[in-house]
Length: 323
Image (tube, rainbow, N blue to C red; front, side, top):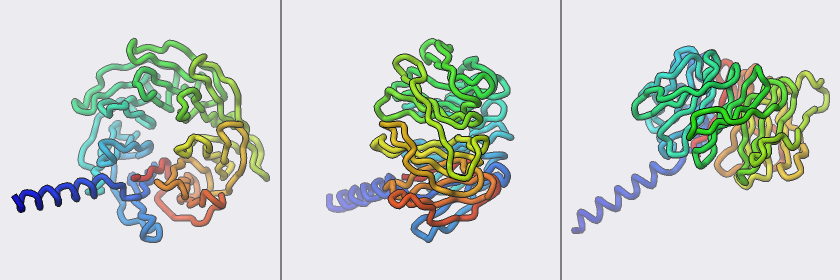
């Protein structure tokens, strides 16, 4: 009995250890076809380069952060990275040139935007098969699914719309006109608002989900930059939903926005073409992937200052943190 109890004790410890996040920062690179793994506890040292399929971009964790899924656009696959091994262990075929995708709440399916086919593909992860394809406007990109898995939102870069898809019916049920070249989404914790970054009009559209109407827009203009330089794409938010961070692309800044008032509170200068953003587990640090300076900016959330720059691979796209 004593031996059995000891075994159970150590098994529990092992499970607990595997469930805890490493805090590692993962950065995808479009041009070097790899993922940089950075350990903040080791003075932001790159501890591993993970080779991937060609042109890795969007990334999402799955299975309690045991897997990291990576959209690899030039090989038409989603790479599956084993986070414990820090290596690609599987591939999920997709349609042409996957860039952005969403994971269903039960983590059984992927919703992948297909720019060339003007559609969104629903892919069964277990079967590695496209189970259905839903037509959208031209060049769909950003994808987000609601927590109840009933509604999917997709941006169309060419039509300047957000498509509202009823997943039960498998069809677009509404189209919301937003700014020019909509890119990414941010779904607020209250479930009532959906934010959309509009790259070429330099603003964020705020959508009321109950009416599918744009209720306000948030404009950006850091000191010393022209409006044409402001190209917002990546967004993230604190867990309490009070503060959003928007990467302003070629304006080389991130903006801190009060979500209640929709007012910009601060701008922070980072690297060249700020693109992907992510917060550390304790929300004390912001990570910004800078696509043209090939580096990662480390921003202190309290002082709202860039405190460090870490060189990474060529054309960093997305940054995620194992929390």
